[in-house]
Image 1: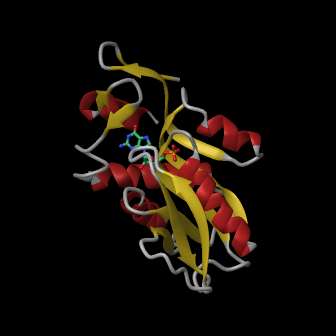
Image 2: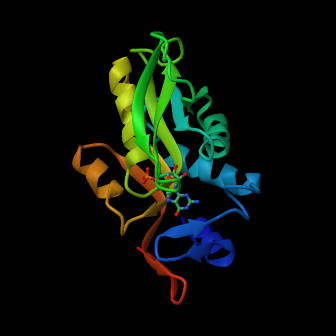
Length: 190
Ligand code: 5GP
């Protein structure tokens, strides 16, 4: 998506060789007009697919998912990062290893909101090693719901997540795919 690539070039900040900061428009301050364009692009890509729910993960996916959900006219569910040791039986759970924080945490969704009859589109801001998406995929599988695919804003294609998940036969649509990046040379898109 040209608009998103241009915005990343203009306002994205590369840290080291593998972290892209997009706090100016996506992860901290949020450009909702851009989010609307992104939501409409996901809608166009998944036109013809029946989708009953959008599933994302807290916190940084929620804004994008909410705006996308307006385009799809379906509810948004976000997996919560579980902070307590006791997990009640009325939730689905899976584990995620955080790329940005480097630790493992449980994510949960209530069984009340993710149903076997749901047809689910996953939305997230970044795809790196694929841990966040894998965690969401596990929740959908546990619920016995149908996974339609995933919509990602920025895929760092030099990391293995996208390949791994596509190899599972899951549809992944990424609006900006980064081939390589560095502080010195900037960002190259696919
Ligand atoms: P993965 O689980 O695929 O390794 O990483 C995806 C998650 O880590 C996303 O939900 C996102 O919040 C975070 N993330 C991964 N890479 C980056 C990055 O380069 N920049 C930012 N801002 N977040 C990232």
